[in-house]
Image: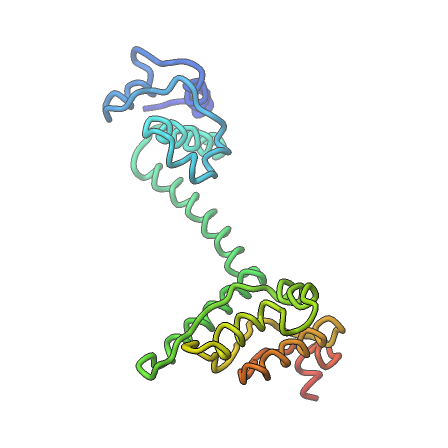
Length: 231
């Protein structure tokens, strides 16, 4: 089947504004697979929304897929003699390559790697914990800024949320489960805010007899890199 890519692309785009009948490629294809041509289709951008995808009918999804395929053929700039499996597989491979590049960019982004490192650390801790020895691990979703705000809003340490959560609710309550250690995923530096936060955390940890484990970066030692710290 020899065809003009641009012509077929125009046909694919026109299906969103009119219902095709007769011998059109679009109508013929839908008839073979027991679907109905759509009379209107929203912009392709909406397909980035998972909810829109879930609410769309099979007719709409296939029509959108045809539009994307025709656009791929048009961008290739070559005349198509036959729509066969090899041609379709080629363009599927092109889309896979684009997706792979996007995923690669996400996976190697510093911010994503920080999150990945955090969860890998949690998994390592869980994997190496013997829960048969009456050990429990609890996760608290709390940012460093939120904890700092908690201390700033409390008139005194013993009224802070961290104190109430760790000392009052567990250590100072009959039947409570005192916390053996508080492990933080935060990195502290030598700024006045971080030093003050560490002081407040240490006071709560001392009250609850709960060691606090955190980490510091080179900025804590007023250095740019850990190599400078070790020198």
